[in-house]
Length: 302
Image (cartoon, rainbow, N blue to C red):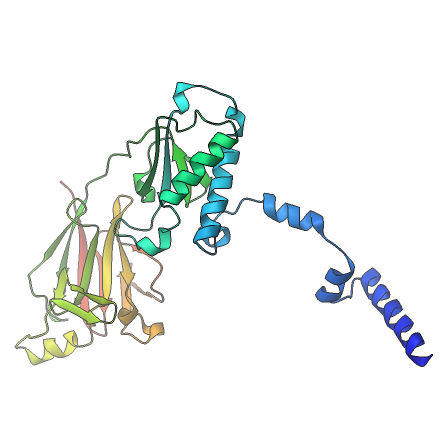
């Protein structure tokens, strides 16, 4: 009998908590089904790839669903204007990590074709159905977003004409030394310029030639001591969206245990605190590597 009244009391207390809004998340969820919340979550279109996807299967299935929904108004159409469809997948750089975009494969294209046909959208992509990996600066004019900054579509294949731009990197005398007097950066030649001490970076996962070389054998002991604070894989300068940008590598990022990387302009120093952000470089900016070495960045106007 005591157990019976105890159970009744527990239920009354739980009901009171629900009414008063003091129930825990678990108890509320257990007592109140929430189909509307589930439906709403399914209908809300994510705005970033992280929100959109967890694995390749999810990526493929949800991207296809969004694309088919995008063309619903064309159901039953036989318009020739729809017959060439180009799916534009946004990548972070031209030399992108293929593992990250493995969902946009032949299976994706075949499954999309099947779903379009099933939805009476056979005219869409009937002649051409292609997947293109492009940076945001290479999107065709008029490309329409399906998921902003992740997935776009267009009915023309031509990308925007690439803008050609150049810059020069030199060193502030006395702070350290470069293998060459100066380095010319040209967006039409390379999209990424690696910066490090010595001709080769020799860090785990970053074994590559350096494009901007800090000397590792300077006969001047003071200059070489400054150079030694620079990692062999310290930072990189990338070209994109009409300008050059600086990004720190793990070994050039102090919060990750590396040597510091700083950008100096208007008399202030701004330390690069992660390896994800790309920091725009403007004319006459300074880049400090380690404790002493300072590079000067200048744009070249033709």
